[in-house]
Amino acid sequence: QVQLVESGGGLVQAGGSLRLSCAASGSVFSIIVMGWYRQAPGKQREFVASITTGGIINYVDSVKGRFTISRDNAKNTVDLQMNRLKPEDTAVYYCNSFGRIGGVTNNYWGQGTQVTVSS
Image 1: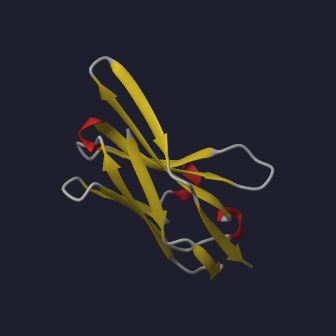
Image 2: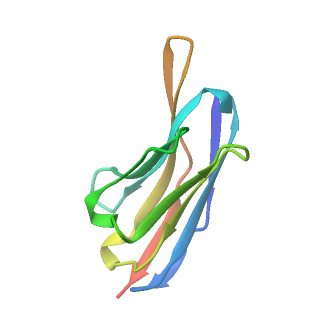
């Protein structure tokens, strides 16, 4: 199993910045992709950004140019630098890991961290 622990959420004014961090432990050798998702009140959880072990990065269009995902494979951490935040970025942000052990895939989630952007 993989355990994911997020930190770094909080309250910020529109235009401000926050940095989220996620630390993985357990069967980290199995992780292929680490990423961030978010869920706003009354909405479904949505993909925000991901990064593979090899450094391939993807972002949802709404955060391109504002958010930057980075990963430290040695420390088993993934960070999300969020700049020029907007009220619509308000959500609970979840760290995610996707991996494989043998022929079996696995998918794990952190407990979530609240990000609130005031207008």
